[in-house]
Image 1 (tube, helix red, strand yellow):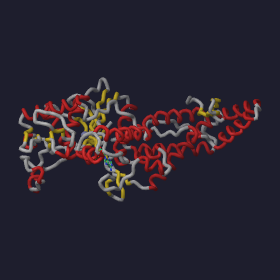
Image 2: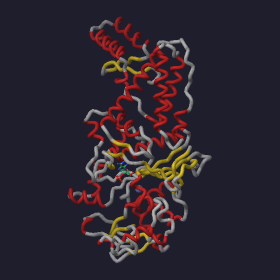
Image 3: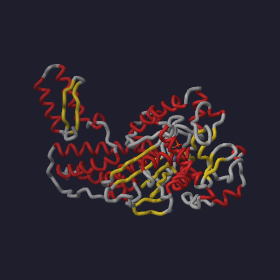
Image 4: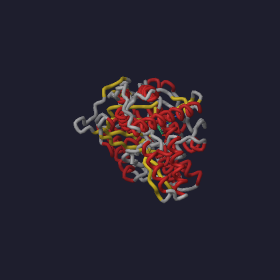
Length: 468
Ligand code: AMP
Ligand code: ZN
């Protein structure tokens, strides 16, 4: 397996810390919970979901942590404007986030630490103390504590950033005059009036953590001093991830992250989808327009994570059509199996091209290309009645395997072929009229087409055979 590592700017062979146990620790920067996440954010989370699922398919034991940024400038501003406590302000956005990842079938991380958890606040304070004692941080006249980037020679290596350029611009924001260097970033922000009742006591006075130290503290607390893979969107590279490296390595003295993976943005008319530009859609916005969670999942997943993806309505329609093709193909395979077709001319069997494409820096476009080529070929064989039941079963098994990564199968109702739906309707009528013999006969006919009928108090339920 190979990944493009932002740190080296090269494709590297993947070697986890613990190859024998096949354990992989992943840290992914989670949402800032000051409003509902937009689908641009979900492009990042779906890329991370794909990464996790593919590693799992290849037999790795993934332990993934995703943080909740529930204290920062934006969340504090929101709570102040709403005139409610910070935790009360962020709670509905956290809940909305969990609803949205479920709709998009994004696997839940093993842990979702929140920055405001006292346990992590304590750790942040401890880390800042260590950085000060090593000369890597200092308290300025404004009472805030800053990281001293000149004392960390590797600063800028992730972003490939030239620090002399940073100095030469000479731009100094008026509220940052206390810093020694324009690039020094806040570890601890001294309390001011705008913070209202948000604040924690620390050796440097009342205040709150900077965003970057939050991630360093939660990541090292839950995954140890070294993490296998750290992800985020490209906008996180600088300063956020650069700062995470400086802080974590400044404390532990060990290499913080082995592989840095960053996804390109979801764009609208060539610009990053973002809240500040106002060019965003939330998941409910798209659901209201009649798109389903899996259609949106597919639309956000189908392009390689390092290529920018333009959001368009045509793209949504293409996603819908692509999924309809998959649904129809699965229904046809099930029919071949149910009818026990034994006329075999097409002996092709699934190989590993799909997985191999994903091994290659998660090349999902190539993987999906292979899936649709397979669909085209097997459909052609089925048109000629030349795909036998064992072959169809092999392809169905293959689908079940790759669908562990894709998670794109529809709910059963929509998958019902028209013919089966009609038989089910007839059977419902027969049962209402208490024509039991007819009802039983219809059950057999439905069964012959690969569907099982169960009678429940809510009426009959149909499931493809072999799935219940
Ligand atoms: P935020 O809530 O702004 O901290 O963002 C959460 C995650 O979403 C980060 O990993 C960002 O890099 C990512 N992100 C934000 N906007 C976009 C976008 N338009 N496309 C892809 N990822 C994004
Ligand atoms: Zn982060």
